Image (cartoon, rainbow, N blue to C red; front, side, top):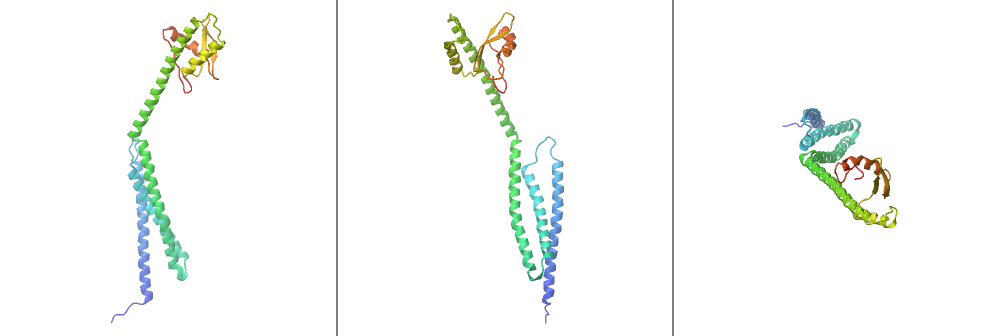
Length: 249
């Protein structure tokens, strides 16, 4: 005959096995967490010295490898606290509910963290990669080319406008800068050549320049100062002097 062990003994053995199982999980989670923290520290302290970033896959693995045991420790800690606080016949149900809802909260958090880490690292890798640097260089080259082309266009249009004004001066016996016809002629020249501001300077006997007419001149513009600074280049044979900044050409 075989004598079965008492019911209370069987429950004690099952509870002991469960306790040992969760204790092993807690110890394993602590060891895994410390190992991943050490691995992350070594990975970032031994990064390439030339400023290159770690691969996105490696960073995502390090993040997940650290989060999984850390959140496992939190879940197991919540279970242990629930066991201590629960009492009576509802203790087992209370512990199971705490464990279940902890897992429900942990899994989406891990997924969000994994996707966020991967997407963030992928974006950073792109902006610091050779492809993005080449794209930036090409964009800068296009912008500089466009900037230089605009300066050449303003230079050529100014020379052409000066030629038209010279022709107007030569065929006008009674030139008055404030005359309506002359103002209309200058406005037409500016509009057709896409010039926003214009000024006519006149050289005086002492070698300086005076402004005799301005058209749509904005605040801060000083054509006399710029003209005086350009006399040396113009006297050296240049047809036009171009100066550009962030606001105007």
